[in-house]
Length: 302
Image 1 (cartoon, rainbow, N blue to C red):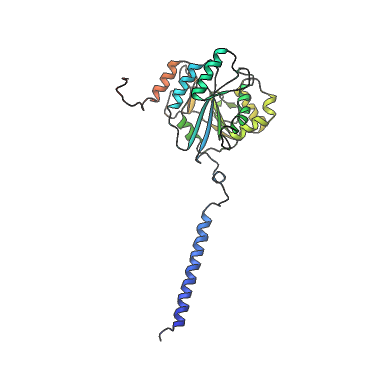
Image 2: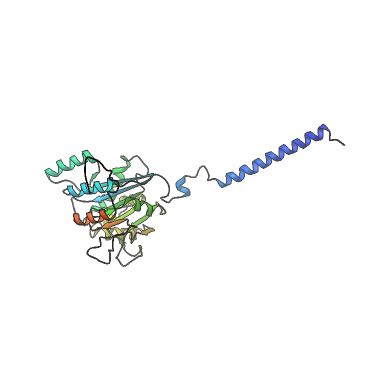
């Protein structure tokens, strides 16, 4: 017996309702696999693999070190920055005290805009490091225009060569909060929780910079070997629960050989104690920093 028109209508209606049900079921399952629209990317993954990573490298130096700053500008400005990463290299020193400094440093600022002059008297172990970190929130919040201005802040020596791509690669899987990163002292140790990070270059997350500004702990102990004192701040304040030992990507120049040094090698983040031009040249030659030089009739470099 042939189905009636009513039966056909019921059949097609049932098929239609089943299709609607399957569509709604599939949509709900798909929605469950997606992150909530109220969850920010940084909440789902707080590591540095997120885009738009911002790093400030503050190189502590002296006003009269013009030649060293020019060398470092060459070294860092010719290094390509990784995609979606902003790395600012700034030279940091205390108030100018001589007339020639006021002229020459002002010219540098006009040309390069890469100098931070702290409100302090130049010193090595009497609070310059504290002044550097504690001044940054006020100096940068209004000038950088990002929140936070930087995810990480580094303090480095002016005799350290940092390879920026290697630094970024080492940070990709690390947290952006409560991070204390560097080369663990003593040289024989691999445990970043025992003492402190070497002054060749150490890095902290922005929340620690803010804590240094606000806490009384650093102010109670601002003088002494500054990198050791910095580690004591971290310990007393319970800060730097996330620690990363960058050894042996960071090390001292191989000559003279010490427990803190080894030969130059490709997996380098930083080389320290480049005290003279010969050591700088040997290091830059090893890493083939001039391979990007394009041939031209205007010069002949064999």
